[in-house]
Length: 329
Image (cartoon, one colour):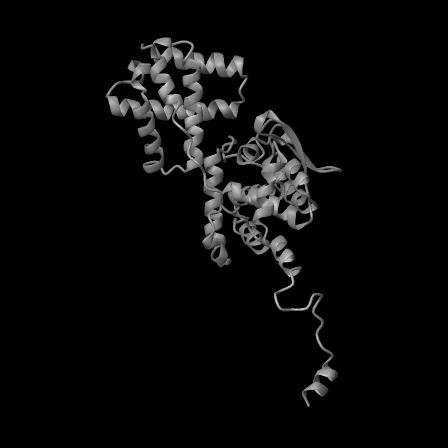
């Protein structure tokens, strides 16, 4: 076994688990990155992962790996930067344990992140929401499960990892109904539920059954749904809903789109961005400002207050029909 294998093992068991006490989501994300990197390096060098040395992971190879993520795997800039952040974290750990590779480590740490382009938030309108919720076939077990999952996602704006992590004991449908979720950064938060959502979830719970620690939304065998499974079911029902709602064909609807939809619904209802940040579990209120930029109704109301050039200030009043008739004579 080469020197890279114990270095990786120490990074996960010592740095992430004990020193940083990283969350399970962080550990999984870093694990996936290192696994992808080792597989790519193995293909490029012809060595087995256990035979790789830190010297095999030079800056040129890391750069080629990042290009591979973009060109071959179709990853966007955000994913590319997240993978690079995990690699940088590993190499910062290696800097104190492999000083003989300090020049190589500094070259890798010098690889910059790419600048991301801010795009408009994609969210669903009221008609599109109704079409999506009507898409699952509620004559089947899967359809009733998907309908309840989509309904909860659109109303609460839970992240896909939070949605799949909700257990039966996290749901309270009595007075003051709410769902408790274990969010990003290991922060717990409770989100209130509407009367309609409570009705849908009660129907699903009556059929779901199970122990308190079982997942709320499960596979047919009772296991926890994966984020990929949720993405597939959202895409499937969006395609079905687009038959009745043509505007859905122009949108890339993902589980995160449903989160944006919940936020825009709150904004249109008059909720402040601080409330939206609290509702969605954002670390900072600045994150919620993207919804102000995406809301055309706010911009249209501002435009309505502007006096066009060459016109008199004040509100326009339609002429009296009788006076208008006399003026036309």
